[in-house]
Image (cartoon, rainbow, N blue to C red):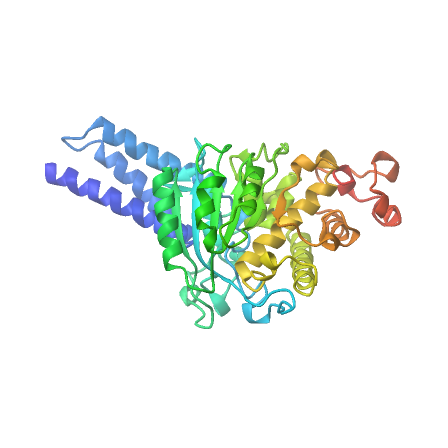
Length: 443
């Protein structure tokens, strides 16, 4: 009977590890099947002789973790792949070149270190929801030219779609580059983090750049000064914490390379349906980085069954087109900092930069954060003045997306021009938009 208990324990470990693999591969139907098996095995283990109560509690905790993770990572958040899909976005070979007058080299993302230090995060094993999303958005969509939209495989509310699984989804496009290497570190010690970073720097090719994603509550983990010795190699920092501005000091004492930085705001806006910057569905900053259209909707309380998919798809196409135009504008700018110019030809880093710029533009117009700099994320070094989120070119895009009529008509009341303060540069457009419900939220 002891052998039966031992076998059950091995089965539990195998299923939990396989479940994690399926989660990373976005095989949600298989994840649900494995979760069902895991629950059944835990119940069976309780009846075996030699069963330990502590083991039962540990496996119950594992089940609670994955259930909480799947509840937070909703079907709406996966309405389109978080990975880079050449079906939905620009092929890397078609990205506009950057002027050689600005920069003489192009860097590629070769390695990424994704770290989180928050307590009580939504996670499964040592994979938090935010690091999971960052990991996903730094990979190529494996279906490549065989891509099928998620809603074809799953119902709008996340229910399994009808029909058999199409295994052509597993066929990768051989024309795509290799995925960047990624190290996921959950609350690592400083020495562990720096050891991993040192190894990555040592192996980085001459045309490579390292992405460091750090999610923390204040500087209670990695300090900016810890990263200074590694600025001998190109770094791309994504800092999601309320003290992110402290990392700006790195570029005053760098050892050779100026770091590119995407910094979250010092203050976090709390929306009714989003909760806070550390809401159960993950960090708002990270959601915008990885799923900008879904984040835009979540900020305004739109998700799941509330949304009209035809209107949502029109809004997403408009957003994708606008981000592409923004990228072309940056690439042809003569005033863009070389730090940004040298990474604009990398599709992953380009998308992250444009997504942060989108978030800045959204929060610059969003009524609760209007004219409040403490809520606006930063790009360091600064982007060209003509590309600031407060310019008419940027804000027009936000208003066009926001005014997709009836995107969420059940919750947003129609208002008139007199009921909302309007940014001066949009008074001319007010007659067009005065009856649209988004005016409740946007100035």
